[in-house]
Amino acid sequence: MPAEKVRFVVKALPGDEDVPQEFRRTIQPHPLVDQELPHDPEFGLYNHRLISLSMKDITPDEMYWMVRRTAGLRHTGERALEIRGADALRLLNRVFTREVGKTRVGRCSYQFACYGDGGMITDGVLVRLAEDRFWFGQADGDLLSWMKALALELDVAVWTRASGSARCRGRTR
Image (cartoon, helix red, strand yellow):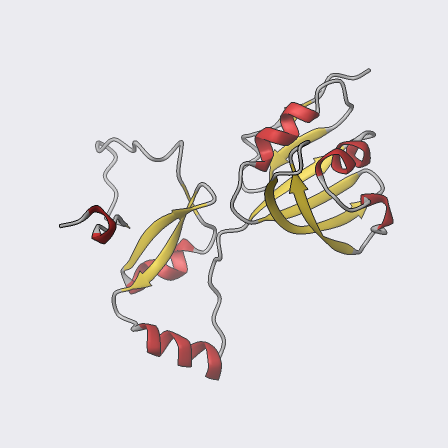
């Protein structure tokens, strides 16, 4: 079988306390996984999370019409970062191509995160919760590492909203 025809998926199986959980630290299930498990999903990896690619008991056509005629709640893989501190605006203006200061408290803006040479990392929606507090809902890309690198010497904290485990704090000037 040619390599381009090979498909890799992850299947959810009943847990056992004695079975090693190799992926637990590196691959997180998304917040709505409990709603999908009864449909026997096949998962793939997107944005460091498992995301359902298909459901064993629902065909793609059935899923399409279900969403068209009713409502569906599905996780799309985006991940939220929180950026907070006196230098939050300064950090975000280093990362995004649009002036973040124009986004008023309680409003949001569509942003592109880029490297210093202009290469795009990811895009997403930035929400300004307070003068010094933001949430960024990002698509796939390693923005957290880039922000942590740029946060050095700044009074700002950056972490993922999902677990808080990737917390970082720049050094206060």
